[in-house]
Length: 95
Image (cartoon, one colour):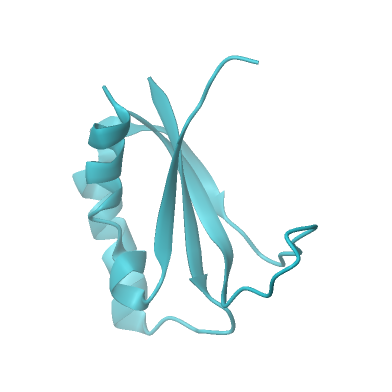
Protein backbone atom coordinates (compact mmCIF):
# COMPACT_ATOMS: atom_id res chain seq x y z
CA UNK A 1 0.00 0.00 0.00
CA UNK A 2 1.10 3.56 -0.54
CA UNK A 3 0.88 6.42 1.94
CA UNK A 4 1.52 10.12 1.57
CA UNK A 5 3.51 11.80 4.31
CA UNK A 6 2.88 15.53 4.38
CA UNK A 7 5.24 17.69 6.39
CA UNK A 8 4.01 20.76 8.25
CA UNK A 9 6.53 23.25 9.57
CA UNK A 10 6.32 26.38 11.66
CA UNK A 11 5.38 29.44 9.61
CA UNK A 12 8.39 31.68 8.96
CA UNK A 13 10.90 29.37 10.66
CA UNK A 14 14.18 28.88 8.82
CA UNK A 15 16.11 25.66 9.39
CA UNK A 16 19.65 25.79 10.64
CA UNK A 17 22.29 24.01 8.54
CA UNK A 18 22.37 21.23 11.13
CA UNK A 19 18.59 20.78 11.00
CA UNK A 20 18.59 20.80 7.20
CA UNK A 21 21.35 18.19 7.22
CA UNK A 22 19.17 15.68 9.10
CA UNK A 23 16.88 15.23 6.09
CA UNK A 24 19.30 13.38 3.77
CA UNK A 25 20.19 11.04 6.65
CA UNK A 26 16.52 10.21 7.25
CA UNK A 27 15.85 9.75 3.52
CA UNK A 28 18.79 7.34 3.36
CA UNK A 29 17.35 5.37 6.31
CA UNK A 30 13.92 5.00 4.64
CA UNK A 31 15.06 4.78 1.00
CA UNK A 32 13.64 1.28 0.48
CA UNK A 33 10.17 2.57 1.44
CA UNK A 34 10.12 5.66 -0.78
CA UNK A 35 7.79 5.33 -3.80
CA UNK A 36 7.84 9.01 -4.83
CA UNK A 37 10.42 11.40 -3.47
CA UNK A 38 7.86 14.21 -3.54
CA UNK A 39 9.05 17.76 -3.13
CA UNK A 40 9.48 20.70 -0.84
CA UNK A 41 6.66 23.21 -1.02
CA UNK A 42 7.08 26.96 -1.42
CA UNK A 43 4.24 29.43 -0.95
CA UNK A 44 1.11 28.01 0.64
CA UNK A 45 -2.46 29.29 0.82
CA UNK A 46 -5.14 27.45 2.75
CA UNK A 47 -8.67 27.71 1.38
CA UNK A 48 -11.49 27.14 3.83
CA UNK A 49 -11.09 25.83 7.33
CA UNK A 50 -11.85 29.15 8.96
CA UNK A 51 -9.13 29.01 11.60
CA UNK A 52 -5.67 30.45 11.57
CA UNK A 53 -2.84 27.89 11.69
CA UNK A 54 0.61 28.21 13.20
CA UNK A 55 2.04 25.68 10.73
CA UNK A 56 2.13 25.32 6.96
CA UNK A 57 2.62 22.57 4.41
CA UNK A 58 6.33 22.34 3.70
CA UNK A 59 6.68 19.16 1.65
CA UNK A 60 5.62 15.59 1.02
CA UNK A 61 6.80 12.12 0.01
CA UNK A 62 4.98 8.92 -0.87
CA UNK A 63 6.08 5.68 0.77
CA UNK A 64 5.24 1.99 0.55
CA UNK A 65 4.17 0.36 3.82
CA UNK A 66 2.15 -2.67 4.91
CA UNK A 67 -0.25 -0.68 7.08
CA UNK A 68 -1.11 2.77 8.38
CA UNK A 69 0.70 1.88 11.62
CA UNK A 70 3.85 0.93 9.67
CA UNK A 71 3.67 4.18 7.69
CA UNK A 72 3.24 6.15 10.91
CA UNK A 73 6.29 4.39 12.35
CA UNK A 74 8.33 5.56 9.34
CA UNK A 75 6.97 9.08 9.83
CA UNK A 76 8.03 8.94 13.48
CA UNK A 77 11.66 9.33 12.45
CA UNK A 78 11.06 12.46 10.37
CA UNK A 79 13.40 15.35 11.22
CA UNK A 80 10.55 17.87 11.16
CA UNK A 81 9.34 16.40 14.45
CA UNK A 82 12.56 17.65 16.07
CA UNK A 83 12.00 21.07 14.48
CA UNK A 84 8.60 21.85 16.01
CA UNK A 85 6.65 20.51 13.03
CA UNK A 86 4.40 17.56 12.35
CA UNK A 87 3.77 14.82 9.82
CA UNK A 88 0.35 13.77 8.56
CA UNK A 89 0.11 10.23 7.20
CA UNK A 90 -2.61 9.29 4.74
CA UNK A 91 -3.41 6.14 2.80
CA UNK A 92 -3.58 6.63 -0.96
CA UNK A 93 -6.75 5.05 -2.33
CA UNK A 94 -7.89 4.43 -5.88
CA UNK A 95 -10.24 7.09 -7.18
